Image 1 (cartoon, rainbow, N blue to C red):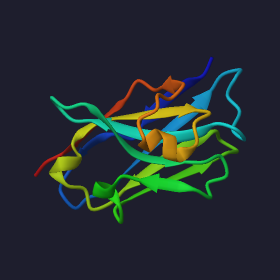
Image 2 (spheres, helix red, strand yellow):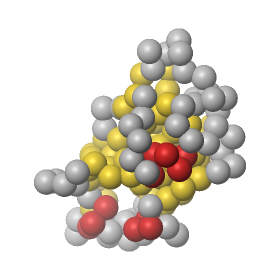
Image 3 (tube, rainbow, N blue to C red):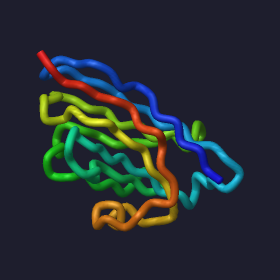
Length: 127
């Protein structure tokens, strides 16, 4: 089993930055084979793909609405993936979920189901 614990959410004003973290643990988690991703679910909407990263950090994908603003990265020594969110907009308000598994990064964007989900962290962007 794999456990994912997100942190770093909170209240921000438009234009602010936040950094989300997701720490992975568990006997079956292998940082050298497991890719990681971020999704978000706004109130009343479906959960949507945000960003994904391969095990080395060399391949990343972002959804169009966050390109140039959000950066996904990972620290394999800490089994942690990050989402640096800059220039936040009210439309970024959502519960952000971390995911991991053996999908390649592009498959998260295509909607294939990850192996494991975190419990989510709330981000509210409001003036």
